[in-house]
Length: 389
Ligand SMILES: NC(=O)C1=CN([C@@H]2O[C@H](COP(=O)(O)OP(=O)(O)OC[C@H]3O[C@@H](n4cnc5c(N)ncnc54)[C@H](O)[C@@H]3O)[C@@H](O)[C@H]2O)C=CC1
Ligand SMILES: O=C(O)C(=O)Cc1ccc(O)cc1
Image: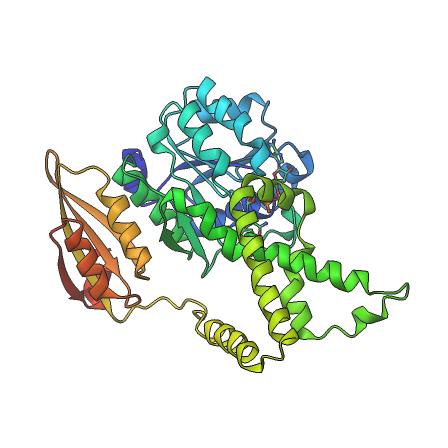
């Protein structure tokens, strides 16, 4: 971040959003609404997407990747690049950033990290400034036509810092995401693809399978589809997503997806076997376990402003502190509302986190202490927090 950025309070001043589809255009729209000081340059191979983003006023400029203005922006003011294209387009942009000597912060919105992690490490001139990202929000729609500036409000947004991540880069990305009214979930980058295979990629294939099943039983008049009640619609909405995009996601996460699908087939088989064996007890248990788990899904996130907790952690000569602490906090369900780094002297700083009242603070404390941190917690009144901000 530049000094100028600090002065205006915006975490980044000049942001290139590459890919102006559902996610990239929604991001541009959200930035335009919530961080109007930031200059956003949109890039898309589709002129219509560029024009639509310009017409909506969501970008200051938009162009194809070969337009000289894109290179000028990257070589000039750009301090953040967000890659929001399908995974197949990533290498081209990493190569451009390499060739143009870009050393600013890079993140992405791509659903899988299989390919981009290795490619970014190999190609980016400042690979430690790449922090993988993934908003867990979207829809079955594609392209800028489905984009909404409020898409990320209340959504979880995964960030995957590691021990090389520059603490201030993570802090600024955290500010960016929370500024869009999303919440940051920090995850080890190596765990990302397995985790999202279970909660996103397998469910997509299951929804598609349900539509395959119903379609196989539909006659020419498709009368069976008219019988579909809310449950069928609830469980199949995502099957309407772009086949091309989802094929790219599936093949970039093939191993975890195959494991998940095999496990899923086993679970379906358990229902079938219990039926064949007349085993109502097992059948009911399977249903009951699923019902309990479904009812325990967290409701929509409502930010807490009443019970805030400040955690202060000295960062003496330790790199990767921010990544480690934030990943531990997310793993025990804690929500970090904001991050501050107080520089005390050369190589000596204190990390200050403001937590909402979610998650297991006891576990957080135990895990941080076990990891060798010296931690102090203090409750913060909303008024104090307003002052801190
Ligand atoms: N659809 C969803 O709900 C979510 C998608 N994602 C991920 O975000 C990324 C974008 O997804 P969507 O916006 O849904 O896709 P989309 O299909 O709506 O948009 C992709 C955009 O990228 C553009 N594009 C394609 N190749 C390009 C290239 N070489 N250079 C520049 N632009 C190019 C297309 O013209 C289009 O405007 C994907 O990697 C996807 O996995 C992440 C979270 C949710
Ligand atoms: O539409 C929905 O409900 C989604 O779950 C969207 C989605 C699609 C792909 C992702 O990588 C993350 C989220």
